[in-house]
Length: 470
Image (cartoon, rainbow, N blue to C red; front, side, top):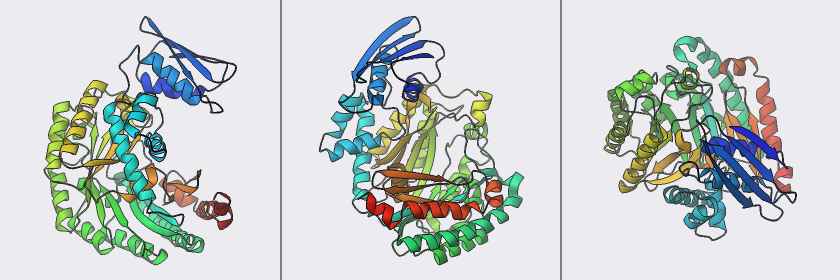
């Protein structure tokens, strides 16, 4: 879409709106104006032989970005079906819901009236806001979450844009990577102790952490236990990931190391769809892995599904969800496929489910999960997601994942160790992001940057700087 900006240079806000309403639609044009006062936004969109206008006022003294987005939304909804999140274009719509909750307003009505959010999505955001507020009330400024990245996978999925490496091609890197990670763990523990911080949630992500052998993981778990005081730990998660990497021996090592929660993620229970996205496991291997997790004593298990995968259908997705529900996992995470630029799906321009099919999948999931006793507790959106929909974590009562809420709603600082991790140092309303080396080999070869990153984290959370934000 051709953009013309008049009276302002807020291109990013406008481009986000275009991406929200016209993600895979070519052609058309939009003229986006801002008055001299900086308060009145007006938009003219010409698309598909039709034209539509929208206007919105910015609040006195507020930046005009929200007004520009709302004006664009009011014009766009005359030309296309209203998007599920209305005028909201950001990745964290729950922040708007939390703000309404803190103001004592009706969150569902507020999201619908102020931003044009659909009733279903407004209710989901309201539930997530309540879950976030409940956790926030239990945390204090000393509490942090700890993330440890294992960026290796058995194979690379077609939709993946993460920095994970294929084990078959890069198996030799793992031992070198773990050596550097062990050293970083020691230094990070010293930093956390010096700041008087308390680890409330520990999360092993990837990649696929289950690619590590039981012995490798046990050594890492021992290093973490030696480096950090875990007396205040409320939750300890391993995102085991691919079912074909999960074994009885590894699960036993997790349990012995104090892990309380695991994720076993099939993404789909259709064998043809698994083949299409490059996952080499079978649906049967998922059920075996889930049974092994239960037999190992895990009473908090998460499973992931993705709506919109190539070759899938609304009926196939619904069937997979029903089979998941028959297992009664404590958490079910429903993702919307996002065609990231760095993924094979994007490179090959592979055909995926149309937005209306994705909507049918997600609507079915919302209905069935609520009927089955689950509630949404965190959600976020991604660029290039089909239909502009969301990723949502659903939980049974008492099984909210602390790490997911801390990370997505930015309720506490998150210290990330390992390649590809992003540390968030949060003090009051200030959030300082500290990115690690992106790739495993870079992380190994540039281990000198570890101390620099930890020093930046310590500086951001130093008593002097923390005190200045109170």
